[in-house]
Amino acid sequence: MVVKLERPILVGGLGLSFSLWILQSWHHSIVQLGEFGLLSTLAVGGGLWLWQQNRSKASLQQIDCTPVDRATAESAIAKAEAVINQLVQEAENHTSLNTLREQLTYLFLELDRQEIKIAVTGGKAVGKSTLIGVLKSSGWQEKQPKFHFQETAPLFRETTDKSDTAVLAEVSKSDVVLFLTNGDLTDTEFQTLQQLKAANHSTILVFNKQDQYLADERASVLLSLQQRIQSNVVATAVSPIPIKVRKHETDGSVQEWMEQPAPDIAQLTQQLSAVLAQQGQKLVWTTTMRKALALKAEAKNWLNKTRCDRATPVIEQYQWIAAATAFANPVPALDILATATINAQMVMDLGNIYQQKLSLEQAQTVVGTMVSLMLKLGLVELSTKAVSSVLKSNAITFVAGGLVQGVSAAYLTRVAGLSLVEYFAQQEIVLDSGSSLHLDKLRQTLQQVFQQNQQIAFLQGFVKQGMKHLLPQTQQVEIVCAEKAIG
Ligand SMILES: Nc1nc2c(ncn2[C@@H]2O[C@H](COP(=O)(O)OP(=O)(O)OP(=O)(O)O)[C@@H](O)[C@H]2O)c(=O)[nH]1
Ligand SMILES: [Mg+2]
Image 1 (cartoon, rainbow, N blue to C red):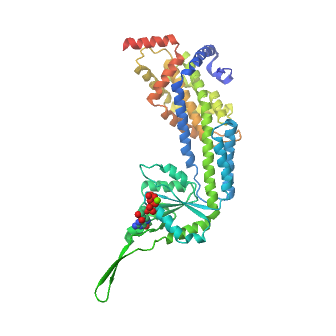
Image 2: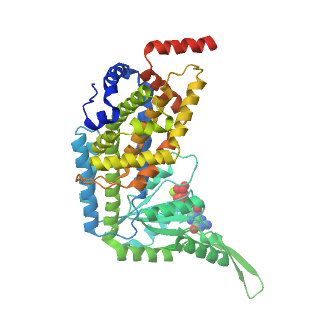
Image 3: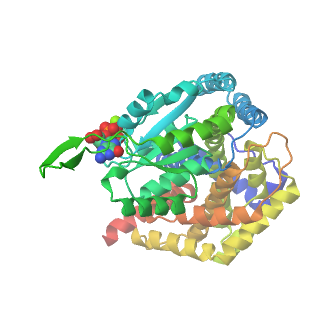
């Protein structure tokens, strides 16, 4: 690996007098690249973190609340396909490609699926199995299109072999959800319902076991559910408790016996029939669209992960260049930024990896924005202080001139680089080369990434790496000796 220093913007930023020195020390650093274990682990960890963040964000993007038509579903499939094709271009042997392609083929078939899938879900023992049994034996389905009931594992349990996320992933493949509860909603039940709504799911909230309530209580629970949910709520008693019947005969004697009331599912069958009649095939298209969005998000995650793997060494390269510059030319802390820290060339390189081609002008705007934000947020002082205190806590009394500045510059470059990666990863996958900048978004991201990288454990490892880069071996030995002499 050889560092390319011929880039004009970069060299301009560094100043000619240092170039030779940097080349030398960089060569020295490259030899040490193998020792980067910790740093790369951190970087990979960071990458994974970004990846997971994106996963959760992706599921929030699916908000769209009306059943869709065929064209919308088809266009969602086309978008997923485009992202998969992009992954092929950037990583043609990617291990996920086979399954992504299989899922894509399956989506095209899904558009014409005839059977409606109904998921029955809710907490433990709310009556899911009984409800399916009663519906099936009620003769209700005879007038309906072909459909299939699927009971999920119970939700909201602490110890279970299936997590709620896994259950909900299964639910998201169905066209209609019957969500059962036995009374007022708990917060987790409410949030789950909101999630289903956000994912554009046709959901019916079923208040089952209403026979366990007195008539007026029953009405008030139903009303409160309706007010909270603002959509389809029905009350059922799919397996009512037997009731005692007492009959007073004319001769004065009393007869008592237990009677099994018939299941009460009238509201449910009515509501379910209405949903199926009104939305029919649209339900299938909506499910297909949901699956297409999930597939696109999955492909995008792989793509971002691939890109992040390629961006990490680029950030590392620039961070040590910044370190070397600030080390060789120690400046007051606040000027660290102005000299070397964020480099327009790094912005452009990272932009290229993420297929967001920025002009030099745009890259400079990004640099300007980040620099002024770093100043405004006091990030420079914070990191300089943190770096000095880590150095001191390592009992290093002799701090080489420029070491604090060098390591701080590296650290700030890293934060800037990681913020850009995070920012780019959140953008829609653009397939043309033009891209617009959302500076506000960039600002938010910078702040978040800085906070995440402020942990002392990370800084300690980072400072050590920085020292390896900046101090010739002999000097490090001296420091170790000094440490020993003190201790
Ligand atoms: N009183 C009353 N009991 C009911 C009603 N519906 C179901 N039950 C009872 O609740 C218990 C659980 O019913 P299931 O149908 O097995 O519930 P489930 O949700 O499938 O349970 P899991 O699959 O174990 O989570 C059984 O004893 C049912 O008889 C109802 O409407 N009223
Ligand atoms: Mg069951």
